[in-house]
Image (tube, rainbow, N blue to C red; front, side, top):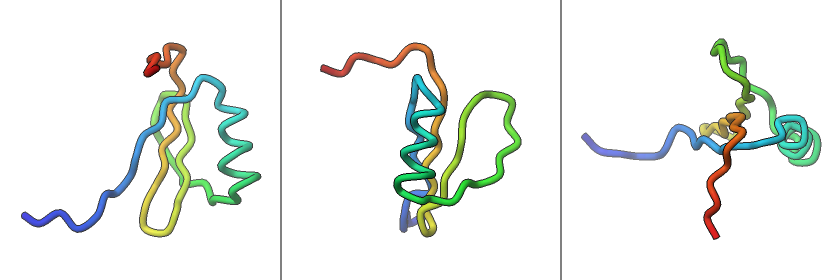
Length: 62
């Protein structure tokens, strides 16, 4: 099997409204329909997707 490109990346967000404003209104990315039963939004970037997933606990990476 040869890997040619990634399909998506998932980003944890604590404030979905602010994240949707940034990706949808500022970057003007189109939303992707999703039928999952947890809070989040998917955006399309060419052949790639950004998955925003709501999490109350965001790891401290610093």
